[in-house]
Image (cartoon, rainbow, N blue to C red; front, side, top):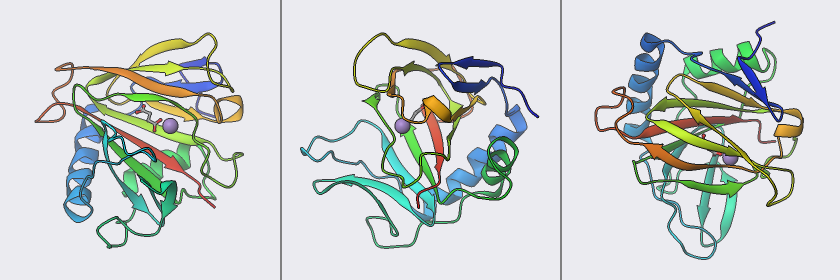
Length: 202
Ligand code: SIN
Ligand code: MN
């Protein structure tokens, strides 16, 4: 069994799980993917534009617009989402399950000034399946909260190549990204950070 580097409030953190070559290969896959399913700027139900840009891979993609948050079979432009890249599925198989593969890999792109407010991932049908997160590019200050909004939180920096498994009590814990450390990684030519989250949706 593969042991995480550290466990923080049941978030299992695998520091440097992906080596430099693996990270570069994954970025190449993601460039192809984004060419097929372009990044878009999601809007919250109240009409506010989120600072991250996103797209998805898999049978489902996560979208947010004036109608709210949900999973959809198609990109907002109408095409089916591309398949989840094989290296991402291999990480899932190693750290989560060899039997059940994720239905969705959400791809979030953070420019240096992007952030993500504290939220729960709760649009999926079965919370027994963890969410797997992969960080690429610039460092991110990741904040871990509680099962309800507010209360004491803990933060840690996620670096390029880190993988986090959010299962058990972590599955419904509030979490967010406070800030990106611009220029901390040279993985992405234009800078910024990519976070992938794989989810079982239905
Ligand atoms: C998310 O919660 O969807 C993203 C987390 C991250 O960017 O590390
Ligand atoms: Mn989340």
